[in-house]
Figure 1: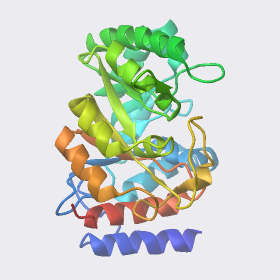
Figure 2 (figure 1 turned 180 degrees about the vertical axis):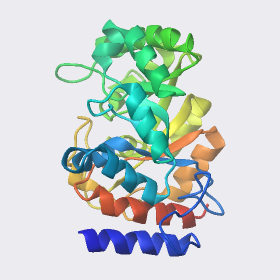
Figure 3 (figure 1 turned 135 degrees about the vertical axis):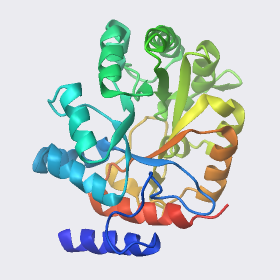
Amino acid sequence: MKAIYNISLIALGLVLGSSNTSFAADNGVGTGKDFKGPVGLQLYSLRGEFASQGVPKTLQTVEDYGIRLVETAGTYNLSPERFTEMLKEHKLKAISGHFSFDKYRDDPESIAKEAKALGLKFAGCAWISHQGDFDEADALEAARVFNHAGEVLAKEGIQFFYHCHGYEFIPYKDGTLFDLLAEKTDPKHVAFEMDVYWVIHPGQDPVKWFEKLGSRWQLVHLKDKRKGVAGDQTGGSDVKNDVTIGTGQVDWSAVLAAAKKAGVKYYFIEDESPWAATQIPESLKYLSSVKF
């Protein structure tokens, strides 16, 4: 595994014109002639490494990728202040972070405080608590929670966002429950993060959603789905179906062109597979050469 990882890093360094693993300055990694990014990493991708290798070594791995921007999913039993210090030690900056729906519902002020301590520009939610199939009542309750959380975060200069997860695309009237969620949330206080995997998995078209909601898509999760795998609207899928970007089902040329037109501000690779550490460099390599 380690040998494969090192080979992948070297290959990426060659593609980006570097002789070592510090591929590019100013977050140029993963970008090229057509795709300008900027590209960061959702740190949840390396949750296994954080658990087995610890925070410093895992953050060194991220630094070695050439990545400079990250999205958080917890601080690994460290205070936000200490975690931020450790990010700085590895030339990393947290741009956005994910926090639980229940905490947004019950204590959004505590999230605003933590997000501010982390220096985040964006704070969001990636899963709406619900029992059984996601339904109209769940969507309306989520809209209420998100609107309030957005107002609380805005006081600290932080933009709230919701990260789609597939189950919101259940048909509703002449659209989907995601349409209802978008309609009932204040565009000023509630932005969206498109996880491309969780749009195609329930059978939706990312390009059409970029066209429909435009600039409300301020963030994107770059994630590809294994070829031949069927989808559904449950919001669940085997993590082994996460593959290197450019090798799966997604038409990245069309998706990235639409994202650019919509005005997406930040892109984060999220790879939930057990072999994310070796796939991430190859995904960055693909993104640096994709054309559209």
